[in-house]
Image (tube, rainbow, N blue to C red; front, side, top):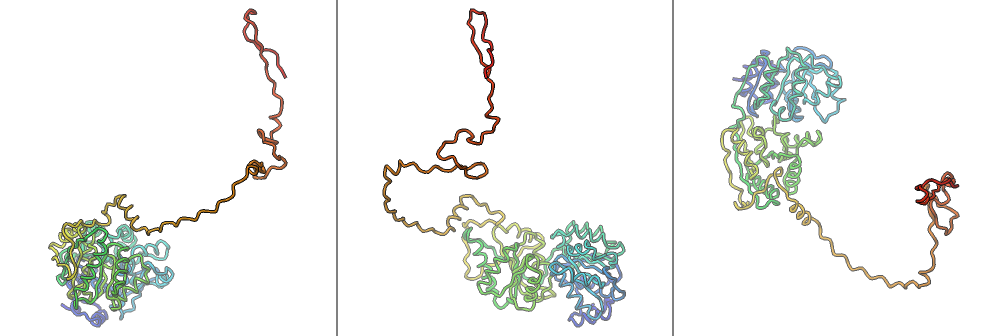
Length: 500
């Protein structure tokens, strides 16, 4: 089957041929005819099989007729990351270059003002991340009542990033009569519930078993055991460099995945220090930096891209020869997406991982998911393995640190302070004479409550409240005198007369 057999618009076919494609992939051959009929499509396929063209080509054909109105896009495509949204926009520019379809890209890190101008003119295709789309809607700059076709790309990644509540809200803002194209590499229960709620009698297109890896990718894992706890990170980075160098002529470029953004920065600095041509990519970087780094990797200016899982989903970077998992992913599905960045469109690729003792549980889950063991690889030549008796370094999240160990480490890291030099003894001062000691010194001048020095007291001691005794305390007080009577009088004590 060829693209000419799919009943696409002639201008679309011309753009596809000029892009160098003639034969559709299995997911494209099954999804495109159903999408052109106006049916809802649920597409399930492993990464790297051409899911993006499965919805961009029929959308351009369906939107060829009609005109967009201001602030009311005719179609909507939701993507989990900025990079994936920008990639979908590039595909529309390539395949729709012979159509006069307007397009807007709504992603974070870009000025709201520029995006508002595009929306106000009216767009046929709106490509957005969920957060930025809802920001525009809440500001009153966007209406979704005119959406005819809605696409959710990489739905399982939406679930991992916590976007499902936003997706449900966006679905409720679109018309009930819309056509929905839903694509995902895996189908966890939450995604299944979402499709049952918002898709109407969809045609299910599944061209491969869920969470399977491409046969064109050669996999391998190296078991790593550090010699000491405090050397685990350093030895792991040295092992990675030895693995890169050991690939020889097969190595063209690579993406190295880490689990944490902080580790991305540390590994990037280490590789750059050792002379490797590399760049870093993670979610905390400015959008301009992320775009520039990704473009530099695509055109070959950068050979090694150290990245977090922001680069694991949907990015189509051709001719990536190697994928390295510096950290095994905590979620087994992410392994499938990571190694899917290589071996794309029938090309050969190599995916290598490092498994420390604390990563064994993650490795077991990955092998259970893909349904086969990952071949073990020997350590690179020149890299000495730690003895089996060496105590394994625990994972950072599981590493117990006793107070004594922390104190010892701080003492070791604390710079040595030189011993203070003995100070010279001051010269002996002449002792005060007895007459000088007995000479009375000038008395200190007292302060009143307002902070002012009291005047005129001289050397008189202050008794009680001094000169500030209130008048009512100086008034005479009558005292009742008592007298005692003798026992013979037959009386006890009784009150006497008052005395002034």
